[in-house]
Length: 281
Ligand code: NAP
Ligand code: MN
Image 1: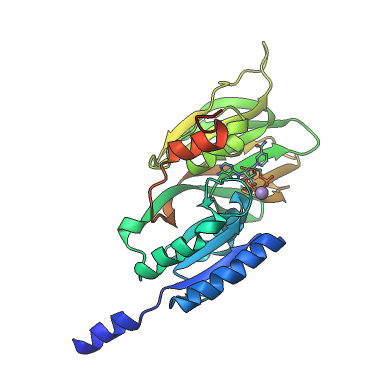
Image 2: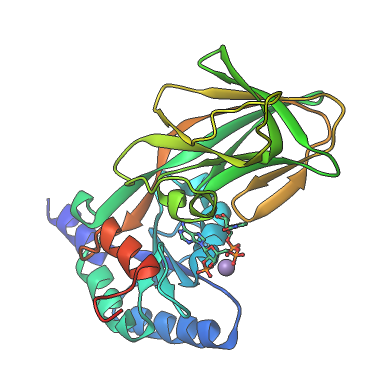
């Protein structure tokens, strides 16, 4: 009994910092590490409890992909060194407060964690099948020619799409590329994926729905592109050409991404602050 208590007392929360690489982010990362270690937190790149991202939302996307194989254990937190971000919602002058919050929660507990749904895609190609996960979104586009694909929802034909491409976003990714496509903002407590069109061709011959679609968990969408065309697949900030893609199956992933949330910052306030501004505007 005494030994267990002792073990609990010596446990130190482990952390790693992923930063954008610019001078300001690098300096802030250095100062964060020093202050955190002084307060008893332990630096650990292999199995961190918390990955601190310093930079922008794009930096957090990189951190997510670097640590995706540990997504069940790791929780993320973002400090922005530019404008306010959706994932990066701590300001540089608040790092001491953030470190204090981390030091006073030796193990991230359910009260200080929020979980957001992510997108799962399985790509079937002549070479086999591969599964990927996106925090923001997945897009599929043509290179050189118009993108043509059949979209099935729950294994039934929905439409033939012609245009630039398709964007499938998570709720927290709905404020990113999806927003530029006229998609809706989806609260991250909803387990859903949104399918938005990228410049569909609509006339008397070609017809698509024209609105974005929100699929609940356990529904899926299959995209079958026209054969023999060069295709560009994006998973968040990662782009790859997919020459022999036969089909893409898209759904809400079973696994979620964890963020440490030591204080409330409602999603709708972030949407307002990022896109509308405060009351003085
Ligand atoms: P980037 O070109 O720097 O990103 C474009 C912008 O999207 C940046 O201002 C970025 O914020 C912001 N952003 C990223 N995730 C967001 C989110 N969940 N909600 C609101 N804004 C968000 O490239 P990047 O930093 O590597 O980010 C990749 C993302 O760019 C992709 O996942 C996609 O969503 C987005 N994108 C948008 C468009 C478009 O709107 N037309 C086109 C391509 C890609 P930071 O400056 O803080 O990084
Ligand atoms: Mn960026």
